[in-house]
Image (cartoon, rainbow, N blue to C red; front, side, top):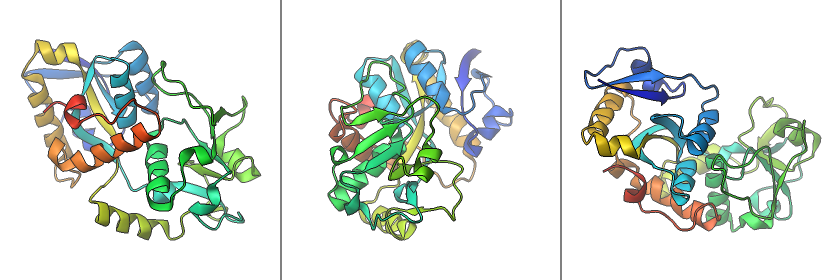
Length: 277
């Protein structure tokens, strides 16, 4: 049996794989717990530590740009509508996205996939370009070779996004955990309804995390991709989250366009350049 050193997060979509409810007689998993799973992305792209690894789709695209020998399975372990991820203080003078020009926006990393989605929406829907703002980040990209653009700054040691947002050190921030709902609001008014309308209009439901496999293993075991897909599909059970390239192509293509426009990758990669077919 082929055994894979594996890092997967806490998504209920993989619980049956991790607890042994879904198994295979051809491939097994040696699970390494990484919490939060985002820490595994850095370990994978910098050290190729895992045979099978959950990873952000933007990170995977950047890994491809720098020749990292991994390919994705069309298995979506995290997705969501992100209009509401852009938050400001409840007493902020910001009235909407148009007011963001010239402001300071906090995000964990310039390459964080939720941030890529939010910036793409700001540009497409509201005409606010990413370089019209200053971006304050906690860390660099998972892919070590990538350099942030000049309008991105690293926060000082000991600072964190939540404190910066609440103190006014940044005017808004993306995907900050632990906020008191009474202290903040969305920059985009009625963000959830706007996001749902956007998704219906564009036909896109944003993808964040997929799963990658080492290219050497896919080449050595031609059956491996199909067997892994069978296992992941079985593990998700009756979840409505769609797997497969065709179902997720609109989201993949839009994110690749956004990532290229934002300088994260040299061009918008085709789906077949990133995923097994």
